[in-house]
Length: 184
Image (cartoon, rainbow, N blue to C red; front, side):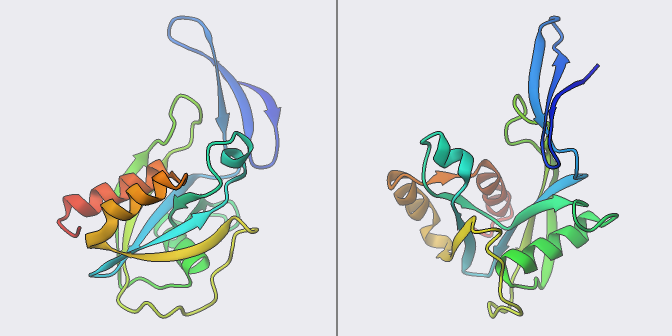
């Protein structure tokens, strides 16, 4: 049995019972069916979002995080499909339209002991890097967009981590699938 301990429009704190009978507390998103995370890439480059995420800043984990276009499925566009959410989030947060999209995994959990949220990880091949509309900054969260050469990814990510950036687990997961496909 799940008990709602605290409720907001976008997040709930819930309590359940673990297998051993102890209470387990976790966060849950009540207003979304799923989450999509999209890795935009060309033949030569990958697009990253530089974000200021309040929880990371509040806890002193890092001022900036390296993320990807992402968003909730069905929170604002009721009944939308995963594919429609991928296209919408890519366009909203990067201003780009994909030549092709590939869903790599449908149930990725970033912190399964803390939040019930799962994410769909997708890659989006970008043929034309010209934006078709100005991207949103998601309430000031997205502070920059950076194209990085695929051949420089490991060095760039290492440098950014040394500079204090936090690298999103979903970003690393999406890069992993690009690597498996031989595109990095």
